[in-house]
Amino acid sequence: MPTEHHTGLILGIESSCDETAAAVVRAGGHALSNVVASQMELHANYGGVVPELASREHLRNIVLVVREALTRANVTFSDLDAIAVTSGPGLAGALLVGITYAKALAFGSGKPLIAVNHLEGHIHAVLMEARERAEAPMELPLLALVVSGGHTHLYLAEHPKRQGSAVAPTGTVQNTWQYRNVGRTVDDAAGEAFDKVAKLLGLGYPGGPWIDTLASHGNPRAVPFTFSQIKPRASKLEHAAAQSSNGQGTPSLPPAPNYDFSFSGIKTAVLRYTQTHAMQAAIETRRRAFTANPALKPSSPEALALLDPQTLDLIASFQNAVVGNLLRQTFAAAEVFGARGLVVSGGVAANSELRHRFTAEAARRGLPVAFPSLALSTDNAAMIAAAAWPRFLAADFAPEDLTAAPQLRLG
Image (cartoon, rainbow, N blue to C red; front, side):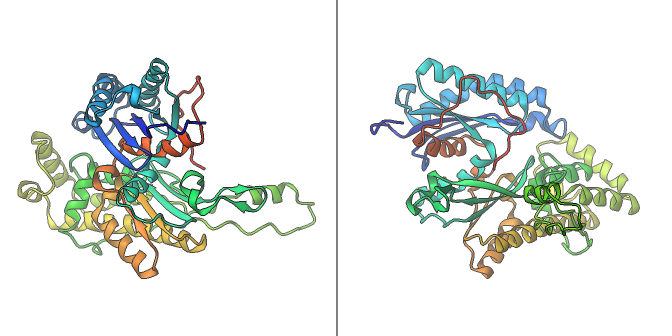
């Protein structure tokens, strides 16, 4: 177990996708530094993240980023209690850069290494900022929507069971959470759908900010997009009941409530709309214009001039439908599971319509809801260091053979 004289300082390292990040956070609640080296301009040339290029850029950036994080925090390696690193999920090569460097730092400095799930990190981005503002913690159970370019998940955060039905004391919930995945995307993540639709319409990369900005200029009800019902997943309990059936017509258990997401269908619907409404020529003209002038911003008059009313209506309708689906599934799950608070995190949590509609619906239901700041919505290392703090207190350190876990799950 850690000694009582620890400093509370943890160096976090994040390299799961296309952001090389490092941060120093004290006791999971105060970021002394948070440095991010973005690869956005590099990958914009390809309309999406290229894994091999991402790994190469991480190799170029990681030493400088960690050094800068320590300098801004005015600390040295000897001041740290531990080093934390994202172990997954993410791109295998990108993860390995961060993990390998973090293991070397931990070995060289004699500090313990803590492996952090990237998805839990996004949740802790919200919790860290709430602690910085000295806000009272939300009560459990808590429902977390993690929604980004690579993930769309609903997690129920609860007290872990101890000694039968006993639970952890209220004052220790921030250190003893357990997660249950109660919803997930079965295909594209919401942020991925934003990026792909933006690319389809000839917009810039990443697509999320473009769609968010341009949607305000269109009619969100012009195109009536719908979402089909997703077939319920069989729970472990249902599977066990089916296996133990005596073959005498014993009725099976009813399917568990389904709060999964699917965004590939709406992406295809947008494509078909552009085809049936002869929009391809305008899309190609717009794509060439943005390629020739990559510095154009979605809020600029020059960019808006390249979009006709029909395209703006399509963009607004697409965003309205995606946000509406996220809202319906999330609040339905919150009601069924008795959530006493809601956290929304990840890159798509920066979307202005999502924040507005979730805030309004939460207020209508009397349910507390929290979002990260825009700076901590996207991938960063402060959230990794914050999520590592409870693990440090529990002496939950990574093994020497820690390696990348691209498909790592939470709960």
